[in-house]
Image (cartoon, rainbow, N blue to C red; front, side, top):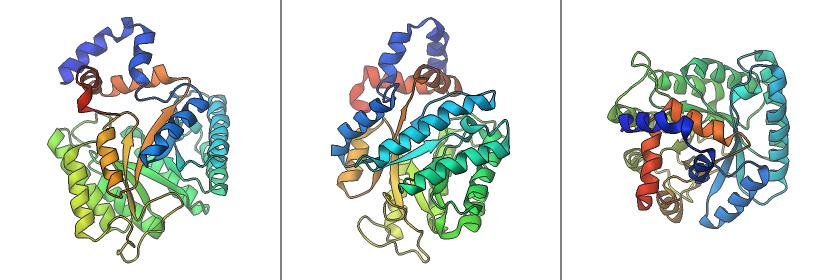
Length: 324
């Protein structure tokens, strides 16, 4: 599969941009905020909620943060004026995390405060392992400033994830809220699990640990083993749809969230699984990216993990395996 992905990547530089857009529109709402709002309205009939991400690449100057600051303000205002159950996700590096920590903290604090005024939750996306510590620290600093509507993403493949869960539980207590995913970044074996089975098992273990620590857990996986293990762990703990969370103490559930957990999916991936979970009463959430940098985003995702090319090709050749 990785060989197949590398072969596709070799042809990417000469692939027409229009063709990349044709493929990516399944996974990206479009270049404009209006595209994101349109897709969310269209999908609302599927009994799902959303977390919206403004696409963008690495910035090299603090001036480069301004488009993100302005667009997230527009996004939050648009969500607050709609009847959509939507939160926002963002990458701290887009707000200057790698350039000036104090500046990034101030910029993020302003965004989180504005979101809180409309009861919108803010998720700090996790980037590669070089940003794990700084992302956790900025979340902790936001929480210490009194921002309770903020959480983070942890990657199951990293060896440090269970320790990070313990750290978050100790810092944030009943306000601890994590999204747990396998992680897209290909990390070295010294710091991460590298085989599929080990990554899947570690991700399932992280979900179980987060539940036992009393956290609100976003289970962000398209893998049937992770989803099935999560369902078994929820049932064994009596954490079920439309019932009070039996954990003591139970996490504080923010507006628009479920009873202690939710299942999350990328736009365009495993829609049939998402709809089935929703029909069984589970809260589901679609991670919905949009922005003018859709091309750079698409190419970066492929460079970070060429194996994605196989999944994209499979969805085109055998679309019944991955219904939107």
